[in-house]
Amino acid sequence: MNKASGARRVNGILSAVITCIFLAHAVMGSLSLAYPLSETFVVLVTSGVVLIVAHLAFCVVTSWQMLTDKGRPPSAKKKRHLMYKWVSGVLLAFVAAAHMSEAGHGQSITASPEHLIVLLFLMAILAIHILFGIKSLLKDVALNKGMKVPLRVAVCAISLGAIVAVALSLWPWQG
Image (cartoon, rainbow, N blue to C red):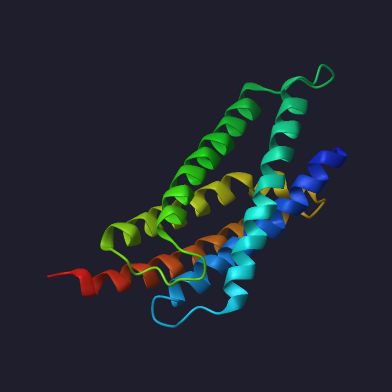
């Protein structure tokens, strides 16, 4: 088993923390449609955004390291997987920006059915981005690759729960 570079290990840890923060954000945010937000939620979001900036920087470094590795050049499959992660990450950033443009700091988001639809897309894209990265994440933080399927199931279950909560909040907008 190859050891991950220092940058990959740090990025893997950042990715794991960001994953937990934003899955918690999705659950708390979807619940906030029925219950008021707390200050903890604002701290969670702010922490996540700061970590995302660091994650992005490390993604640039680790992607560059992989693509320019003369000792072990990446296969076409690895390059394609990297492209999936970058495309889903960029798409996630654009949809997150749309979400944040309508969201105020600490305010409940019930402004419009259009924004609730943005939330649905955001949670789906977040889940897809996480699913693309789980195998790399496990390798980078030296965890058993047998955890890949249980983690994917957990991400899907949490995401689906948040999506259902948001979708149910759409019903008042119907009719």
